Amino acid sequence: WLTRRHSKNRQKPIKARAKSTAVKMFGKFTEGLSTEYVIREVLLGITICFAQIPESVAFAFMANIKPPIALHAAWIVGFICSAFGGRPGMVNGATGAFAAIVGTFIPPAGTGNNGEGVELLFPSVMLAGLLMVLVSVTKLSRFITLLPSPVMLGFCNGLAIVIGLSQLHPFEDHETHHWKEGPEMMWMLIICFTAMIIMECLPKLPFKIFKVIPSSLLAIISAIVLEFAVVRNFGSRTATIRDVSEFTLDTAFPIPFFISTEAVSYDLSSILTANGISKIVIQGIFLCLVGSIESLMTAEVVESFTKEPGDGNRTVLAMGGANILSG
Image (cartoon, rainbow, N blue to C red; front, side, top):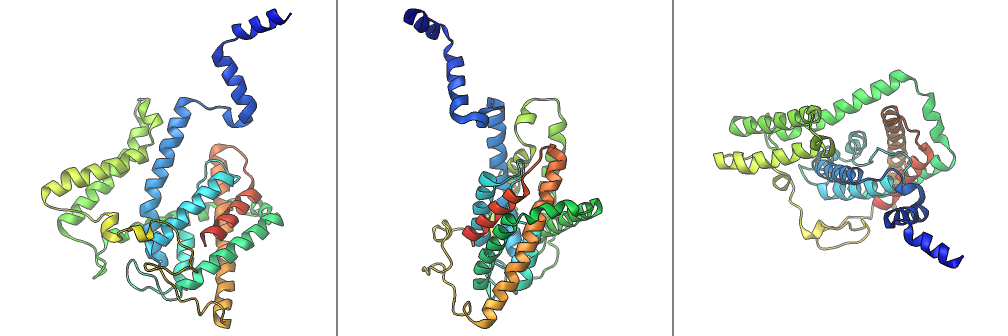
């Protein structure tokens, strides 16, 4: 009997045994995995990373804060919400609505600089995170289903307008605030429309490679190639992320706002004043409302595309924890 049992195990294919072991160890997480799926997900992650950098910088200018602050907040929130959130297919990060609200609290102080009162922003974001956790615990996210369809449509259109307008600032001169002119504007338009055409047209071509590699990643690569292989060789140039805001080793890692270093230091004396506390509470409530509603409404839109139900409470809970940590 033992001989027959061992012989059956030896006859069982190695691949089949490995697959059954993987399913037992990881359960549902291995379901649907394939080489094509993994490649596509990795490339999509790289694409989102590339897309978040200029977007975070743009929203940092809108919010009147330094770009490194926005970048660190974007990757922390994106990682936590993607890992622990309840909505597959949605990646949280820097948003136009959040930046627009923050921009009303902090006055402008020049491109790439922190406005006055930026030290109140960090505890405000942490308070907003705590309120989001409270929203999740009390299951208030279920009331998002009461919103009528026209509100969802208006939200999507309004968000598109906010994001679209935030992308126009590179075409303006930072000193005169007028539209750029000459070869720089011409090359910027060429790069812009080339990227748009690639994103729109390549997925429609009947080639499998364009189904695996995201068109947005190809658009970013084409823009880089055009800039450094064509534009620079013609004796012209367009502004890159490094030209707008150079990142150094001093800002390469997130530093808590209450720790002072040679590169980063904030005046925290106004936080514990009556005026400071009132501003933190007001800003925290506004940020919680805007962040929760925007995230839940975006999740509803994503659900209409993927046809897969999400968990609104888990989404808000992950976003609350992410904002507490990023703040």
